[in-house]
Length: 104
Image (tube, rainbow, N blue to C red; front, side):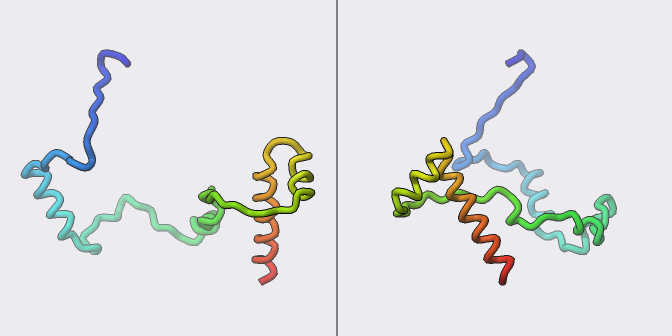
């Protein structure tokens, strides 16, 4: 850390009080209506923008820990490919899920 670096920490459970100016700004923004917001520096989102948009399902999915009982030979087969057998299980199930969704 250089001599010009300044670090602050804050206890989010006990934040410092707002100044009078900060309180006035919060109140002003709270009372602001949608039609009062200046959007001139924000481009219009037309069909060409949404054409390249991705559905939220394309992003990393949260993992959930679970317990399943599988046949020993199935586990042996998955492990025979080396490390990452749980990832392979997930990939196989995901493929089956996506195939099922496409059929519906």
